Image 1: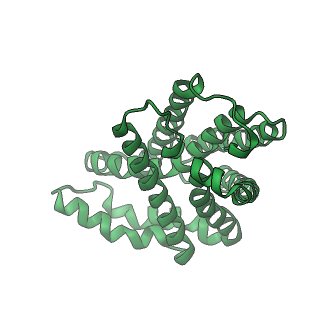
Image 2 (image 1 turned 135 degrees about the vertical axis):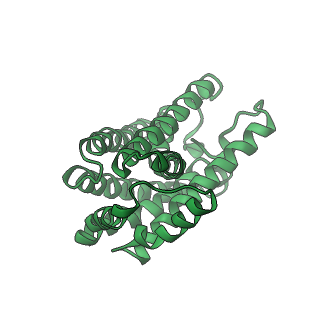
Image 3 (image 1 turned 30 degrees about the vertical axis):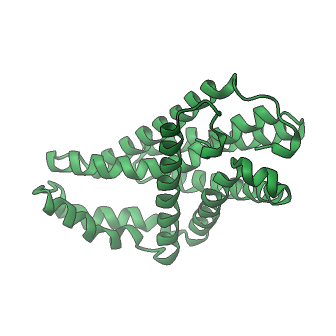
Length: 253
C-alpha cells in the first residue's frame, strides 16, 4: 500500500483520496498503539479495556466470557511485561517504521529531499530487522493465540523480513521498480497490524456476545487482517506494474 503520490496520473481522484485516507488512518492507529505500549508497557490492553466495555454496553451487548476477561487480559499483557527488552525492540522501531515508510513512497520527498530519502531508507532497513526478529521471538515462543498465532507470525514475519531483504538486493542492483514492489509488500505487512486491530475490534463486538473465545477472535483477526492488507498490496502492484516506467535512481522508492 503505497503513498498517494505513487498513484498513476490516470487514476481517479477519488481513488487517490481513498488510498491517502486509508494510509493515514492505518498509520495513525499503528503509531498510537505503539506509543500506548511504550507508555504503558506492562498493561496497555488492560487499560484500554474500559472503553471496550463501554462500547459493548452502548450497543446493548454482553460478553459471554466476561467472568474470565481479567485473566485473558493479564495473559495477553503478561508476555510484554515479562519481556520488556523484546517489547521495546519491537514497538519503538515499529512505530518509527510506520512513520517513515509512507514518506519513502512520496515522489515529492524523493525529488526534493533525496539524501533524506536514502538515509531514512537505511534507518528503515535497520528498524525492520529489529521489528521482524522481535515479532518472531514474541510470537513464536509465547503466542497468546497458540499455534494459530504462531503460524501467522512465522509466515507473515518471515515474509516481512524476506521482502525487506529482496528490496535491498533490488536497489543495490539498481532495479528501482522491483525495489518499489518489495517495499510495498513490506509496508503492507507492517501496517497490516493496524488492519488486524480494526478487524479485531469488529470481530470482538460481533463474536464475543455469541460465545466465541478471545483467543479464537484474536487468531481470526490476525489472519484476516494480514491477508486482506497483503492481498490489497498485491492487487495494487499488479495494477500499476505496467504503468510504472523504469525510473532513475533519484526517484527510487
